[in-house]
Structures are given as C-alpha cells and as structure tokens.
Length: 256
Image (cartoon, rainbow, N blue to C red; front, side, top):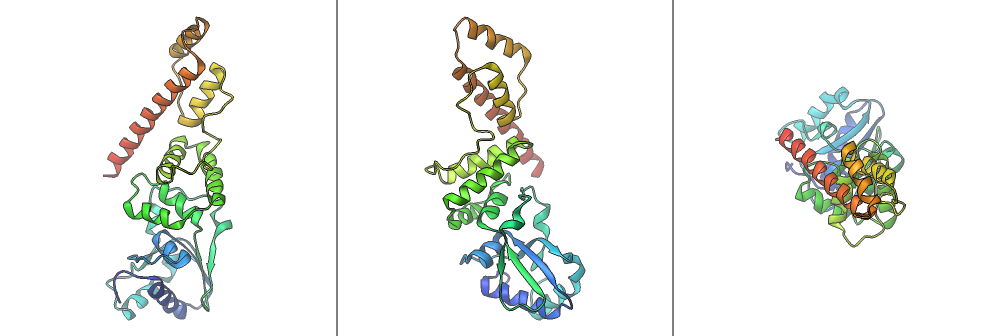
C-alpha cells in the first residue's frame, strides 16, 4: 500500500484493525485524516492522527504493528497520537461536535473532529502551513461555524489573549470579507470612554499592564484636551500588537 492514504485506504486500515480487536474501542480522529475521512477531502495524508482513544492507543500496539505488516507499510506509524503533543489548542467541548463514521465496524467506534474544531486546532498553531490554510478554506465554514469559533476564541481570550488574537487574525486574513466573525471578549468595545475602560481593554485583548507613569500622562493629556480616548486606544493597539509579535517571534525561535 502507498505511504499516503486516501479515504478508502484509511477505512481499509481501520477495518483491518477492527478485525484484530477483542473488545470495543473508541477513536477521535483529528488533523488531515479528519478532513479526509470525516469531511470527504480528496487529498491524502501520511497517517491517521488520533486526538483521543479509549482504551489508550498504546494498549493495541501489537495489533497496529500487525496491520502495518499485512498492508506492507514501512512502520506502525500509520496511526498515532503524536499530534496531541503539538502547540495547538483543543476546545474542551469538542466531543459535543464529533462526527461519527459509521462503516460497519464490529469493535471500533470512529469519530472525526467537526469543521469548527479542525479549524481551531489548525489556526492555533504558531506556524500554520500552506496545507493547513488550504484545509481551512476547503472546510467551507458557515456563519454558524464562525459564531461557534467566536465563542471558543472568547473563552481562550480569558487566559491566553495572545492565542485568541492570533486565531482571530489568521481567520480574518483567510476570509477578510466575513463580518460575522469577531469575539466580543477581546474585540474593541464601543463603550470605551474612560481611562479605566482603556486599561481593561488592554488587559483583556493583549494581556498588557500599562505603566503607571504612562497612565498619569494620559490622564493629564485628557484633562488638557491634548488627546482623546480614541487616540489612547490606538496607542494600546500599537503596543499590544508589538507585544504579541515579540511573543510569537520568541515562540517561533524556541520551536526551531
């Protein structure tokens, strides 16, 4: 068998594994395999990425090796859970959106990530690949999908605003005409009218703590009408974007 699999070949491998099992097993498939098996992408993938399984994938290592030998594959990495060690974000409620693949399995129950969760996992990695961009485009996200992504990104923003903002920017760059998307958890609010509002905006969107001396300067300039709240908000955006870019560059250097 080829070292890159289409949907038909992936299902053939899973059926071969199913025949070797002695008890029920559940697989949650992610990545390119989820696009292919769950969403009928025509492309191929080198492996089947497993996000979660019950029992653990390691418990059926011998059966996986047997399938590799029977199908004349180079090694047993045709199915693996290496993807869970990456830097992507997995929504905690992804199980509510799983898509079951019903293909007359005896012991296996196979589920694939939804369009929303595939998009989130791909958008949240620091170095998004061209193939990931193509996959997100081919997912053909609906307005409902964008709303769910917005809710998820809002949750992320509460403790990882840089990750949330990165997801938002990447998705907007892929679909700039979609005005339905945007998380109210960290997007600029119309209610910004005081210094306190600006400081809250800086914290929620960029995780920035403004120097007290700068705050004092802004207050004095506001009193003397030398500056407006809108101007201060623009300064926060400028500082915040520099802060996020610096953090992302550091993360990229770490991953080299």
